[in-house]
Image 1 (tube, rainbow, N blue to C red):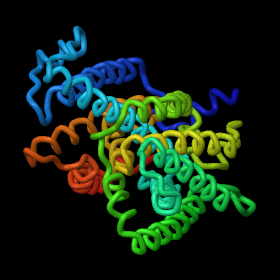
Image 2: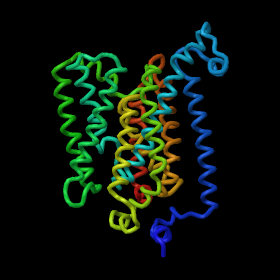
Image 3: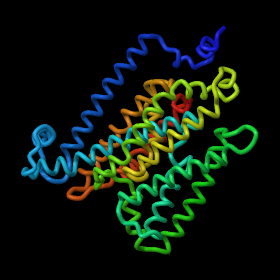
Image 4: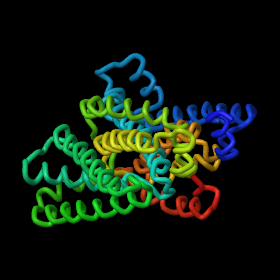
Length: 352
């Protein structure tokens, strides 16, 4: 029996699927893509300021800079929608890859200390270096996310067995706690930094300059491409390290590629929108209700469902407190907790 045939024998039943099921899942991707388009259209059409759907279409197809409604669409809502698409896709894929690499159904960007690393570096830039422009200090956030994830992976790799899921989770919790204490110490001693930092920390899609989006786009693009190619590797890792090695899988290399992918996606998403809770955690579980455990399908589904969910949460935040608005990070935290508890109580959804 060849290695390929052996892997098909050992993989979960849902991974080796009949053509009829594959066709249904492919159709589901098309439907989900249409839903994402509707969510993006709602994001462009709903918000502060008067701009009808016709203004949205005209502002995108035949822009008139003298029209105030079209100006709102192009200067405010388009960047906000693009930020939601980028951050949502990045968070959805990062959460999925992280859960697959760590074999932990509760894995999220906090597991590798990504949010904690980004936060401490942003606070340092604002407080010590007197950086005030988002286009500047967000790159400190990206650097902090990269260094924190590298530190977590390095600590988790110590020992004979390398970076096992348990060691990664423990090292991530320890590093996140240490970095969180440093962040709190700096904020408590500098009220000016706290006032500036809290608007970034809550998580928001509004007020993002196009320059910021262009800066983050290459990292997200590379991360998305890498993530979508990791499906077979994550399927093999789900069988356990020993079985994966027996099937010819380079476990260390696969985990390293997953870690690099997570750092790129989480760091860039944090740059674009700040730390947003529950999207990367709950979306992969919701996707598995339909796709099953096969990461070849979970990854593209998550890449479409996460930005749609994030955009809809942002739209909801714009309409529930008019004329003001609730930041999307608050909405996802408020709405994501209860469905996630219900999801993880179902035994099938936590089987990775």
